[in-house]
Image: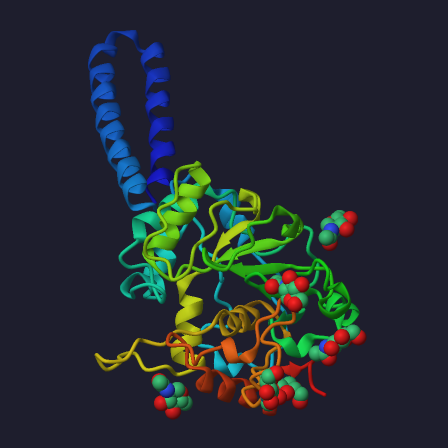
Length: 361
Ligand SMILES: *[C@@H]1O[C@H](CO)[C@@H](O)[C@H](O)[C@H]1NC(C)=O
Ligand SMILES: *[C@@H]1O[C@H](CO)[C@@H](O)[C@H](O)[C@H]1NC(C)=O
Ligand SMILES: *[C@@H]1O[C@H](CO)[C@@H](O)[C@H](O)[C@H]1NC(C)=O
Ligand SMILES: *[C@@H]1O[C@H](CO)[C@@H](O)[C@H](O)[C@H]1NC(C)=O
Ligand SMILES: *[C@@H]1O[C@H](CO)[C@@H](O)[C@H](O)[C@H]1NC(C)=O
Ligand SMILES: *[C@@H]1O[C@H](CO)[C@@H](O)[C@H](O)[C@H]1NC(C)=O
């Protein structure tokens, strides 16, 4: 609002100066008034600028490019899972330009991490200001109705030679440190998005596919400080992580996006229907990265297929992942996740034909 009013006023001032030149006798007073008006306008403008900087709202001349990036092509046909979502068109990444507006519009600023931005709003804004953009797809992207595959890390992918099939999708979503290198036959080569957090990210740069976008999931306040310090080249404080976090980041700034915590809230409360309050003697449960990845896919795809989503609890000797030697016996009933609720959810979306299970026998 203000900037639009601001420019015409400036114009009027200069018009008045033109007038002064043609009427030299009345020069003195209008010039004084001109200065006063300019001073008042300047003060209002500076106040507005400070306000914007402090609250992280859009300062009109800055990130228009970022806003433009949010104009993605929408698929005209309704996807089969649209009924599950509260806001199917929700933009899944945070942008510096409209952080305050978006997080307040969807109530995200009222929820605590990992479902909202509290108490870390200022750290979110710091990190966002360090990133290069918040685009979802390449600006040359021409596919409005995207076929997507979400590749879980389950041992069920071993020896299924699904690699070529997986590579044929428009969008390929992978997670954590599930490698492509050395497993191309089974899991393919391409990666569009890779979801990660400090305890789960690769540290060997050989695993960085420069064509992929790395999507940061913020579970706790330390995660943002980790990213911020790593980008600034500061020492990493490793306290407060459930496992040693990576001490370097293989991804470049242009590759990094921050997942809007709303996506995690949607996964927990809408899709899995995890309770909002837990008794004092229980750890609150949160969705796994796999379910978060599927929720992300639901917001950007018109078709979603799944591969590698299976826990084989019947055989403790079966492989937990398609890589490494971990077996199911290592997979304790995780205190932070409700695997039963997740399995029920997956079965139900497969049965309702909302998604397709690629690793079906
Ligand atoms: C996959 O194939 C390899 C080589 O053929 C074999 O050694 C391995 O046991 C197989 N793994 C599974 C899970 O079937
Ligand atoms: C990345 O994109 C370039 C250009 O499209 C392509 O030549 C290259 O093979 C891609 N790399 C991977 C790992 O997909
Ligand atoms: C798992 O492996 C152990 C040791 O190799 C063996 O004794 C056990 O029978 C196996 N269990 C199953 C279900 O295959
Ligand atoms: C898995 O086991 C094999 C053979 O026991 C070993 O050579 C390899 O290093 C192990 N891999 C990992 C990731 O631990
Ligand atoms: C996990 O989810 C299932 C199904 O919603 C529910 O019955 C069970 O009580 C939950 N378990 C825990 C520990 O929250
Ligand atoms: C996909 O199909 C396989 C084979 O039938 C099954 O074992 C697996 O549990 C299914 N995945 C899910 C998420 O239900």
